[in-house]
Image 1 (cartoon, chains in turn yellow, red, cyan, blue):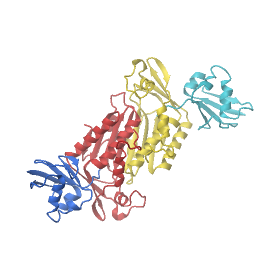
Image 2 (cartoon, rainbow over the protein chains, first blue to last red):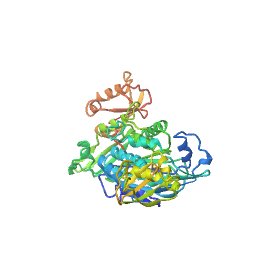
Image 3 (cartoon, rainbow over the protein chains, first blue to last red):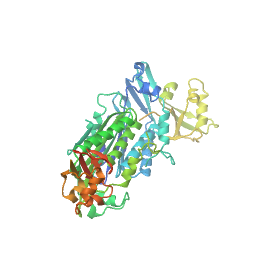
Image 4 (tube, helix red, strand yellow):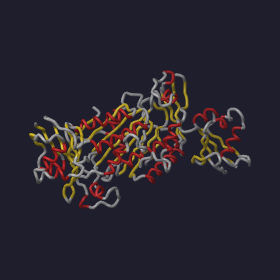
Length: 171
Length: 171
Length: 84
Length: 84
């Protein structure tokens, strides 16, 4: 059960602990938690600048839609690629769907390995691929109305770093 | 209180949650947990190979010595470097000292940021620098006796990736 | 031949429909053909031709607009993904 | 001039001492001088000269073996660190 798509929140500490529970060969668990930001709409429009968000575009809530069936397959495929590429003992991916509020957890990825290099690389790889390959879509609620979040070119660039032959990939 | 050196274990979930508690601007928390591996001595001697550990060198326990006073300063300096280099909102570093058993947590690093790229990079940077700059030393207990863990060249190489001008650094 | 077509996110909203079963004309043999066939219905369907970086999946695998489709396939159109 | 000297980990064990206060001869002005001065005491102190990649900190800052030392400094010798 390495991949879950669910409405419910999750227990980060318990999930991380589960990856090394009862084992003595895990030396490293790298993990990531993604959360809903209130300033997301403004920030997306401005790129990654740090201009103060416009109140009219402040995110009051966010609804995550997904493609049931394909979502799990896409996440499983990403996890399988990570297993093929790094020496990892276990991977856990949780992605929430439905309506979420600022500060809520959206996504969780954790990777257990003997060594930190493999754990970090696989964890970041999974997040980068999830961002461009897994069929989730965010719709934000703002005072100015609802709007679907645009895909970011920076996410494509992040995923492309992992293509074979890219110098910037650490493994 | 971003840095702690302590004998006691810590609550990974609570530490991660604390970095985004009451905030709506944190979009990403990257974190790392390092644990005591039973096969550490054998693995260190063999490099990173995956040969089965020799029973005589299986780690039964590990004692972490440190340099009180300097340890905290070194960790603070590493955290300050991370703040200067990436857009991060908060950092938490916990390193245990004293006697630990296989499976026990040794070290924890977590970084909160608006974006995952900064969070991952700063978290991995802190771990790599901690491994080469913070005055901790491990002594392993094995059936063949106690031995001080040798520093690994791979840890020096990991830290050197972050030097200015290194292509392999993702930021 | 029949295929089941799904639409997600902004496309689903723009079309006002999340799925339909369609008997394909003989000249529609690829995902690109199907996109063009649907877009030719006029508003609001022309959004399928207008969507930048339109994504398509056949049987829940992302493919290009040159991928073959066959009877019984599940074909999904959607905008670039924005999860995580 | 007096300095306080600390030893850690395998060095501490090899020397059987974790700290000492020492009045320095006038010709000992750098961390390297101090290392040589201590190592010249013979066994077990020669371990200081034999330790590969010997590390030294002055007032809790890692420095090289060419760093100046002055009265009141805390000088620590230790092997490469292995935490994390």
